[in-house]
Image 1 (cartoon, rainbow, N blue to C red):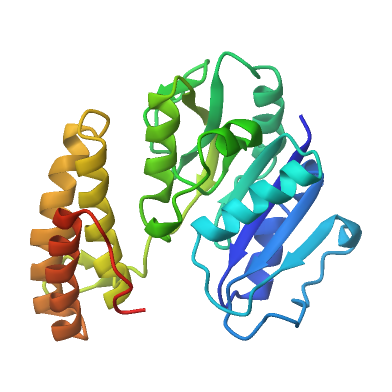
Image 2: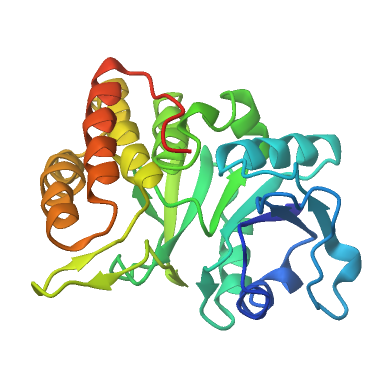
Length: 281
């Protein structure tokens, strides 16, 4: 296995980014640092990673390309440079100390068997088991993809931009005979949204109007495209968490109430139509 990694960043805290990268850079062959920060096109990121400078490749278009486009560019780069697998990371994801090296070794001993996507155990979601856990999907951050397979099935879906990119690529791979598995022993500390405690006692993720629109629209599109793949629990979550509860939380405790309420309306309508638009960007 010849392993490349990509971390997609957006206005990163360089100290936190360095700490997170140091948990896995020693065990990858190259690290693609993709900067989505606007106006960063020709200015390399000044991140201090002594001893690993030659491993780092920096890319940017000078604007926010979200997630799917950079991942497809990384897949193309891997094919051109003959890397077999790609690790995909968020800027704020942190592997437990020493867990990535073991994760990589377990994958190397389990290559083949139509395993195309290997995932981690985010925030200890899954109970430990000795063998890889077969699953319908896994989150993007911490996943290792078989480059040949991802290229063969058409790459990541760029019109999704960011939300459900992980679900969709796994569902599509699974339908074409490939497997998604999770290493339950590899713990990844993952942050979802900007958690805020309201005066009413509940927690809200504090997403922007763009993410509010994107989450609802993309999940409905996913539901429409993969009705057999998407689990009942996720269907209930789409209706309850991403629409009903989200609307209540916006009205009771978040700012930009009008913009986010409109985002939910258009997210629902565009999702039902099956085509998202460039709204609230």
